[in-house]
Image 1 (cartoon, rainbow, N blue to C red):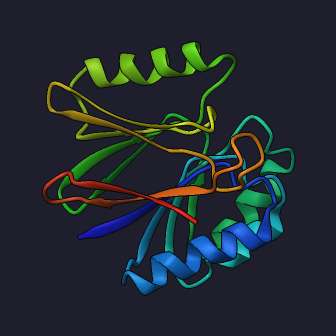
Image 2 (image 1 turned 180 degrees about the vertical axis):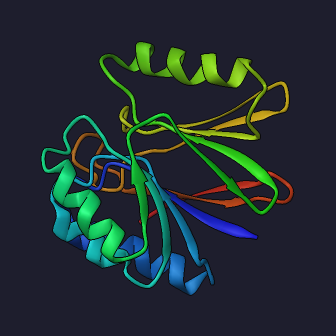
Length: 167
């Protein structure tokens, strides 16, 4: 089973639409969004997917985002958000503060070995590491605002293979 991983769309609808197009072209049905949607209208880009997500530090209209998400049968919550999918355990995070602090937070959850995958955003930088049985993934930023690169990830849930896609 392939799943899409995206973070930090920051209202960039062109980038969100392109990411959705890539996910759709790859036959992906489920997406993990790791926060910083920003405005609720960004959710509508993903209407044809099953979406699990967490709020980011820049998501100001959390209650409206949550209401629209529920209307679309999306599952969005505050981090940390645990998800069971295809017999695997996922922990969804965004992050707070510095890059170092955010990485340390993800590492702490991974060190517990309670999850197959720890997914996080916030840093706008791609990350792929393994701690014990846990694979840690940050897809980078979809918006392209900080690095100038738009990036998403595709995860094969069965074997743990990760593909980063720049677009």
